[in-house]
View 1 (cartoon, rainbow, N blue to C red):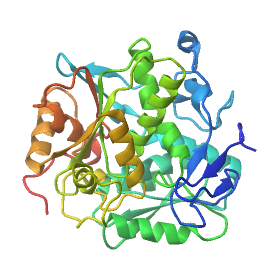
View 2 (cartoon, rainbow, N blue to C red):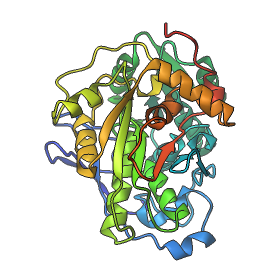
View 3 (cartoon, rainbow, N blue to C red):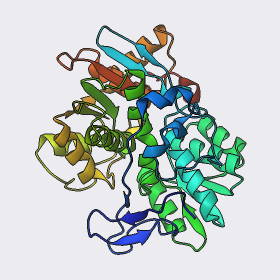
Length: 373
């Protein structure tokens, strides 16, 4: 039984299903679910006395419970200044060294309640390592599908947590297709950071933490890396909840960042399109974590950025390398995907007070090479 009864809802065709089922996508259109859930206001004054993890925002979480069974103390990452107007939130200091812990803990908590035969996930690395770790914490059988060429350190981490790493020949999209096929088997819980909306309700705690750390306000601009859009959509959820409850007086602009080499959403946004015309041609990029040619939630991502008054920016491989080196010289060792937002805003003006996430640790990938193979 879920702590708070919720239901899945398809944003495309309005189909519903109970969140207590193992139905991983809309059976009608095969699209990703949203969650029929209304958050209650989070009382800022009571937060200092609460548990020091993302579960402190219990009123805003669909799996709210007085005693969550799955946690590694995730969340509450530091906010440090980079310039007079730009600060970085150090989400690479999460238990598995990436922001994906925010959503993975929610998926593992849900899976523990549903008791599937096995849990599967697909990932270019960070989501997979996070799901593997939280399944280990929950005592759940787990397999993670990863594309060939995934960082050896990430594969090592997945296996260290006791999960099976299923290496798929081909790119990130081929990996997702293999995982979705396996997800249709009986007794399988698909811990998808893209299709399962509980993940988005975990990533929204990124914005709740900023709101708390900034004393009940948000910056002018939130810059977010976008591949499948799980952090951006979570942030958009949180902003709408905080604004609807009168807990902030304005909605920040959402600035989405993609690698120039794989930037289908940026192209669609600047063309004024509401959907992607089709999958982008995959090209090599150092920012492997956001190299998604056909994100299933593309329409939602484009809509969220436009509604906020934000925009899309793209970064070249050279700017990614330069940003990674710059952050390392400042004491921050971040993987190439995780530096994309800093690469985008280093020379950008007029954004007002701005926060960028540093999403994954450099220890997982090393420094970017001189060329992308």
